[in-house]
Image 1 (cartoon, rainbow, N blue to C red):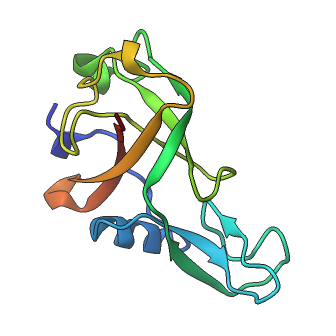
Image 2: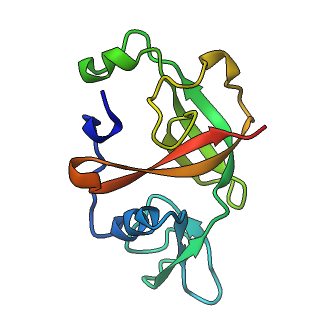
Length: 151
């Protein structure tokens, strides 16, 4: 399966659309409360701040660095369309700037590498990773955030 043939693509809604637009530009940004007394980061994106209730928000640039918070290696594949790439990993990455924010994805050898491009034995909780961006879907319509292991 080529990356552009990924069977599961994210559903882009109004609140999350800016996340995907920034990803398409190679930027990892997270929504934050724009209320002067709050400023809390939040993910997934939503219309109002769960901390203070304000409706104003902005999108802050993140470094793209994080740590593996959790991971699984699906055996057998959960979806038949992913069978040719098994075994592959699915990870949750906590962001360095915002440890309460965790993004789902895959650790890969390069942005456009297959999901099984990293030996599962190399994965560890707490392993440092950095974000890379991979256009996928019909005509590269969505850019996925994927993760590379840091040395």
